[in-house]
Image 1 (cartoon, rainbow, N blue to C red):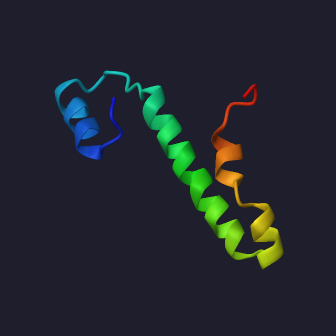
Image 2 (image 1 turned 90 degrees about the vertical axis):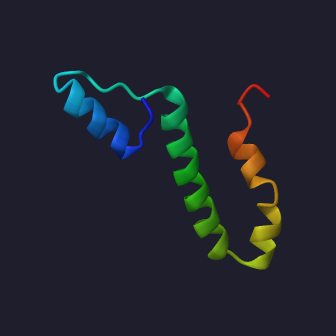
Image 3 (image 1 turned 60 degrees about the vertical axis):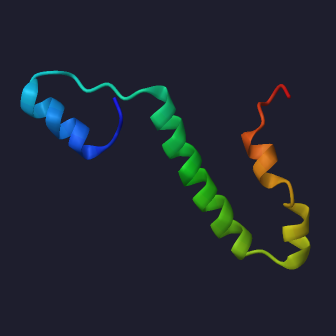
Length: 67
């Protein structure tokens, strides 16, 4: 199910005993959003030299380990 609160409320109203299942896409989307927020905050606290070393940090974080 989508994480939008009106959807959850509608399901709880119509089917009160239903188990809510959240799909993988929405979980990964939330995790990526949190990771991006932390990554950007971390970049603000480093020197210009360190920032240059982190130039491709997003690519490294989002690339699969085997690639």
